[in-house]
Image (cartoon, rainbow, N blue to C red; front, side):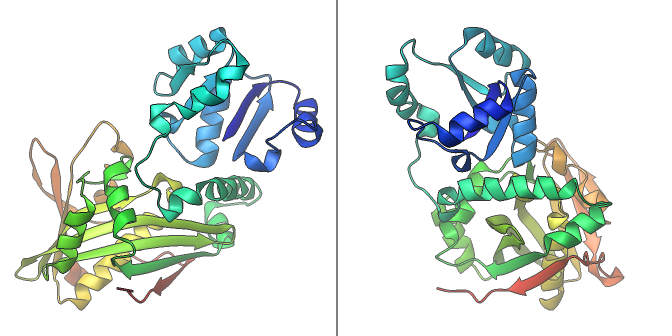
Length: 310
């Protein structure tokens, strides 16, 4: 939940905090934007603060002119028309199809707390002199593990839902992930990101395939947008390249397959020293020679390998 309100902030916050009939209090909201800016700007700030795409937002407002503004200025935001009577609001919200889900992962249940932690990170970044100081002050730890029965549901969910930082956008079911785990030619890794503000949850997935002749390929490399902007992708890549070296691999390759939404990832391989080998209508195949050494692991991360539980 987030507040997007044109109002005087002190009075609005006082109502949220003190009104005896107010069910929701400030701590129930991941973000509060209360001032006299237009609501399109509010929504852009909310999305940036929570590190999510505008297409992840649903806008509810009882003012038709505000809804028209958002539809015109931010068409990617889902803007819905509330019933005329406030009595019908609760049943209307319960009926919104986009809020329905067949299953909930642990990360889904903890998402409100994770968004609150993200607002704390945004406050921190405004107090430091450089990005390097910010990264160090976050005290980040990356927990890596080979996929297990416990993590399969979340891994499959991420392959199906992650769009922005997803190099190939391969979608997999839980059964397909389980099949790859059982295949000796495949490796499936999951990554969890923790920092001083809390646990971001399982937010990184990589599927690697042994092509033979000491060559490996990234079938899938993705990160939730929740952890972008902190060089996590670099650390995850280097960790995986180290694992390939342990498997006696000499080369690793991966495709970037462009979509309408994954442009943030388009230069990922190039930035990390890969060489473009082939370009087709589907995308570009990149390759890295592991015998030349690896990029430097960012110094602000602690890496921890978790034992796999069956």
